[in-house]
Amino acid sequence: MKIAICESDMRTCEYMKRQLQQELSTRYKTFYIGSYSDGFSMLDGATHDDNFDLYFINASMSGLNGVELARELKRYRDNSLLVLYSVSDKYAMAAWSIEAFYYLMLPPLKKDISRIITRAEQYLKERDNRFLRVKLKDGWYHILLRNIFYIESNAHKIIINMVDGGSLTTYGKLDNCEAAINDEQFIRIHKSILLNGIYISKSRLLRWFVITAVFFRYQGLCRR
Image (tube, rainbow, N blue to C red; front, side, top):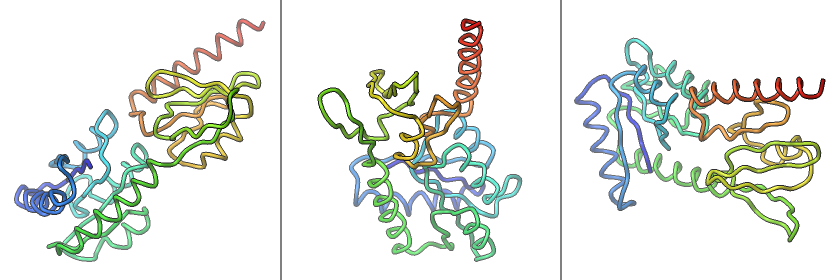
């Protein structure tokens, strides 16, 4: 499990790390806890290559506060779980409005940390085991969603491009694939391309838009 903490106060950050380490060490041989001192640095990491399962965010930070940060993170890491925390319940309603995974009061009780990690494990297990059922030439296959990079349609063909560089081809409509997946992390960047947002940072997504636009402009010119 990979966890990130966003906390401007060093003592609070170290305290949160210790609490999480104590809980995680009873469950995992290996785990990772990263930290950011402000919301802007965490957001910058999220829009590039930093991808965590669970984010712990101080709701009352100055500058980009935790609620604003969580709202922005959802745009780039919608599949990750956001835990907002504070010394009071002042931000509890705001956390609920942005569908935060949990609102934690400081100082956290051991049972609270344990409950959060347990719930996160259950959610991540369900998410990671979701699949798309497709019919290929030699029968039906279940393809794990986490292994799909993007899906494209070409005429009546559906091409499923995998994270490992391979691809599978079947027949059907992209609309039906999107409905079967039914997951907000898959982004319809074009009528013929469905992209798995879990692997796309802001900069890579921008390149995808540019490449896609150029590709379809080229196709249009070729048909003239």
